[in-house]
Structure formats: structure tokens, C-alpha cells
Amino acid sequence: MAPRLHIEMINLARASERRARMQAELAQAGVEAEFHPAFDMKEHPREEMLRHCQPDGPWGLFHDSNMAITISHAQVWERFLASDAELCLVMEDDIFIAPELGQWLEDLSWWPADADMVKLERWRARSLKVLLGAEGEGYRGRRITRLLSRHVGAAGYILTRDAAMRFLAERPFDITIDNLLFNFNASPVARAMRVYQVQPALIEQGNEPEGVALQTATRFRPKGLALVRQKLKRAYYELAYPLPTLLSALTGRARLHQITFLAQPAEAKQ
Image (cartoon, rainbow, N blue to C red; front, top):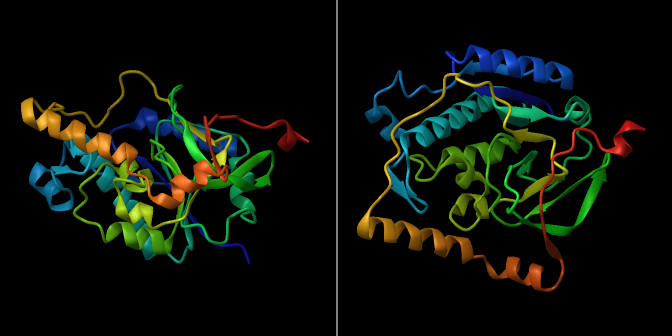
């Protein structure tokens, strides 16, 4: 029997234009998602955010806007755990979606048996390369392989109930959502999970109308010794890969790849 899937898209209640755009994007992909109001920093005092998040952590300062989106993801996980679903797809409201995503979600036979999470997204940065396991399964012209290095972005991923519970147990969070989920050096809870990447990706950020409501706040850049401390922290976590990961790269069992986004591979069109 196929696992039951809970699907949510994070969207501010006041961001109606974004919501309309995403409803059209979901419809063309044959995906039905729930919309619940995201945590809105304009409606909640900072003291409330600080009950969920710490202002500083292994990646440096934790800005208010990043706290708000991290809290929104946690709220999705809580609703998922309150359901009877076994897996949860979490999406943000500024994405392009491959038209075949609905077919991937209807038939989850591709889901790796040992996976805690599968990242569906590509982060749009030409210079970014991620370390992927050399072995992987193919499905509809794409591959599902182990993700072994940091991959920015949290706009499209699927996680298990156990993974959701383990992430929620990390509250108060001390790192941004994408680093919490996919920075295996700076996030101990992520390092303990088996995470996979779909390549080419099924989701990509960047689909947003101009002048819409956003989670915005003044971003404070540390100065002096605080800035040096943050840079040193990030430099350390960029390099502090565990020995098994380094051995995988050195022995060819994992290779660096640039993640791409492809609406529909030729094989899937057949």
C-alpha cells in the first residue's frame, strides 16, 4: 500500500497574489496542497519568536525573517504529525514546479526505503555544487541519490514522521530552516539522517510576483569581533565533514554535482 502523503504550501495570509500564482502552478502539476497561514512576524511580537528560536547559533546571527519562516515550517510538521499521513511534502510559495510532480506523488514506489528526507529542490546558484552518492535509483528520467553535503534552500522537500519529530525536538531552533535540514556539518540532527536528492530537481525557487507581501525585517550585520566570530564559525562548518563523507568523495563513491531543474525529462515524456 502506498504511503499517505500530507501536502502543504507555506504562504502568508496577506500574500494573496503569491497564493494565486502558486495555486495555478500546483494545478498544472496535478498537485493539491493545503494552505494554512504562515507565521507572520508582523502579527507576532519578537518575544514570541524567541520562544521558538535562539538569536544566535552555529551559523551566526538568526535574523527575525529567518526565524519566522523556520517557525512556519515547524507548524507544518506539527499539522502533519496530527494527521494520519506517513510522509509530508513541504513547499514554499515562490517556486516553479515540474508538471510531472503530481505523477511522482501518486506513485511513491521510488521512495528510498531508508530515507528520512528527500529534497526535490534545486537552489539557483551557478557556483553551487553538492556531493551526491555515485549510486542511485532512476525514476521517470531523474535519479534519487544520497545527498552528502550542504544544499541551500527549503522550498520543496518530503520528510517522514520520525524526521518531523526529531526536528521539532530541536526547539528552540538556533539555525535557519535550510541549514537545520540540509547542513550536515552545522546541524547535528540533519547529520544523523539519511537524506536524498532528486536530480534533475522537480522544484526551483524564483517564481514570485513583484511588490508582494514578504517577511522582511532589518538584517543586522555583526561588526568587529562578532563578525570575525561568525566568519570563523561558518568557515569551520563548511569544512567539518565527517570522515565517512570524505572517504566517499576520495574513493569515488560520491561526486560533486551541480543540481539542475528540468520541467520534464525526455524519458518521462515517452
